[in-house]
Image 1 (cartoon, rainbow, N blue to C red):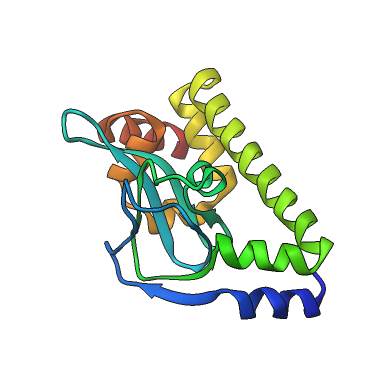
Image 2: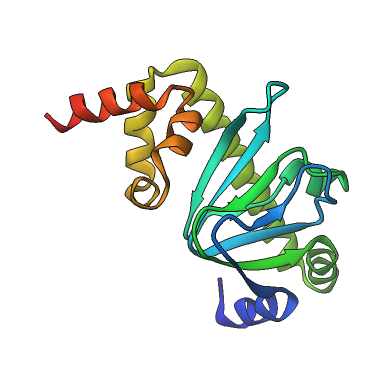
Length: 177
């Protein structure tokens, strides 16, 4: 992104800091903001009918976060997003993105690129869950970001992978040999 455009984007959004365990978005909130994680770690999760937390996404520095479906449909968030450690976010509202887009076609391309990114990430997540073994899902996560494994507790990693913490321990043991 050209420096001039980066400055426009920075002026249109804001940097916020979340403390460990602080919620950024709760299920049912308006999904009218997106964020880039500057530093830190977050998780997107739902609470099942049994009251258990099921992690959908684990996110670290340079990842985008938000309920993209709710964002593009002007709907409500379908899940919770919470900081796992102290986290700094660059946050921008839908109205700010719309204003940028009206002013310059560059932002239309930017918005399309963000949409493409969200689609690719969702497709990868679905493929991961449907086509790969738990061990391969763990290796894929490891390949995506070792930072996740360093910053995020094992209980969140295991639910993200769709396995128990004990199964994750066994996978880690096998891989480390």
